Length: 258
Image 1 (spheres, rainbow, N blue to C red):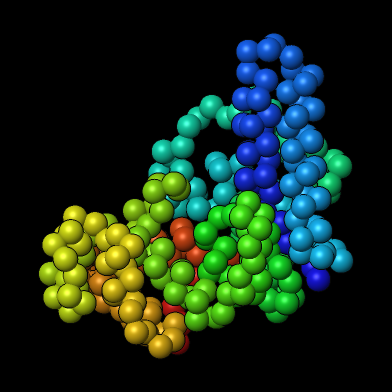
Image 2: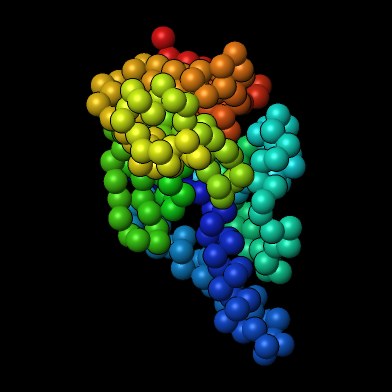
């Protein structure tokens, strides 16, 4: 089986834990050894657990270079500016020893989503980010050791949930709040007036039989909240949360289902 690995969290977790494990000892050599050793153990674990006959490992391009940042300047602006001291060392090790690739303008989760789509969802994605649950196929969580098989319907549901809820980690607002008609139609609580959380988002999509119906419900909610601006707002948020599945001279962005 082909395994497609999102290396960002592996590098970050190793850099943080390696640095903390020797914090105060003033031993940079040991810190480096711990960090690179943890990267190696994580990758060995993934390859063994997924029984990979072949793997591809990806790292994200710098955030300032990504296509999301180009059209939404606040993307990931809430994240700390200072990076773990050994992060670049971990990334370099993954590039030079493990063959990690960086796709210009894309993030690692976009790259593995593209690869999984290219093999018609027969591979396995290795990642701990919930965003990858929008991509049909096997997803291995290397932190918990669990594997799930994401169906097309489940993948679409995850995507449209994110379009409503947003993602605080990446500074993506999502719907923001629910309008009166949406609250009444889906029997939401008064909390939905202040924000569309997971409970409200799930109720809006509850019972939708396919992606087209999911989209229609999300579209109606955006129109109720934003009026004449609904289309701009929806397209913007969808392209922030949607993982790229095709690259043709540039990332092929989300389009509404027909």
